[in-house]
Amino acid sequence: MKVLVINCGSSSFKYQILEMPEGVTLCSGLVERIGDTMGSLTHKVIKNGEEKKYPFEQPFPDHTAGMHAVVKLLTDPEKGVIKDLSEITAVGHRTVQGGERFIKACVVGDAEKQAIRDLSPLAPLHNPANLQGIEVAQKLFPNAPSVAVFDTEFHATMPPQSFIYAVPYEYYKKYGVRRYGFHGTSHQYVAETAAGFLGKKFEEFNCITCHLGNGCSMTAVKNGKSFDTSMGMTPLAGLVMGTRCGDIDPAIHPYLMQNTGMNAEELDAVLNKKSGLKGLCGVNDMRDIHAARAKGDKAAQLAFDVFAHRIRSYLGAYYAVLGRVDAVIFTAGIGENDNHCREAVCKDLDHLGIAINLEKNNTRSGDVRNISADGSRIPVLVVPTNEELAIAKATLKVLKK
Ligand code: ADP
Image (cartoon, rainbow, N blue to C red; front, side, top):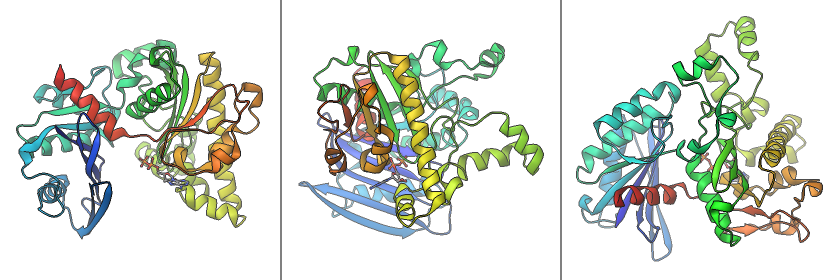
């Protein structure tokens, strides 16, 4: 059975077709710069273990146009992987904000679409884009149910002491002001994979997951459930990210508005798009930061130090929150690939039972691996995330019900 997974952003979307339940990827791709004068589509086909890449440049006025181009490729005799669109059994959609309304993935009908729309004020950059993806898919694949899989779902188990902000309680009741948490599919996937790797029962497994990509978040997983997480009501909170500031003193908002003349919307854009690593040193890709550090660039060094320090602070906090930690897990672009970052985070933590083996840490691999030093009481693992597979699995689970 083939499941199409769609992850829609405001000006881009990723897609993947997986053969389920085996979880084998048949093709994947990325459509970018939707709405610009020139857009791009990169389509990858995996046949007999070999990957073939097909890049295209063409304008995509909207998501519908991008999806039409993808659908044409999917059924292309050379570049395609299906003969007919009816071969797609279901479409799984990454959906960012499910609020308290969606604590489980579900088939999307009109009522669910309206509810996802109603939640848009809590995820203005993401939910409208996710909805567009759902609407386009429902038109193009009328016989394949669309299933929404929420980033917030895994975190629905957080207890009130983790998700309540200390502001007047009525704001929670009236406006939904609380911590929701994001990257849930990834945190759950790597935590479950790690438990399996270590031969532990997931329902008894405690771990700290560090999802470090362009967006970054950490989760304290207690007995296989999210107990606390660093992102908040929106994905702006917590760790330092590529372009997002993460935690800052809330009093900085009025202070900057008074001193710079920015309005709330302008400040929000600065904190989301011009802050984080980029705000500190001008670039947001960790590889560029390392290249600059190697040349003695002080701003890049500072950005890296702030980034790693924040992760260490959360590591210590979640250690205390969990009491017993069975693993520390690194994942996503930086977590999986950046030995410098993992080293800086785990440095001098022997007293906490966390120590990594530098040789293992420096060895590149796409596999799940244990990089801890021999004497490390707590295993430190690198677990490649696979959000698409997790979404496809969740989609199947919903259909089976
Ligand atoms: P997204 O959050 O967009 O899914 P990814 O998880 O793919 O992002 O992470 C992208 C980021 O990972 C890049 O911006 C870059 O900072 C980092 N990254 C990717 N490869 C490497 C590498 N080899 N070394 C260090 N950082 C890397």
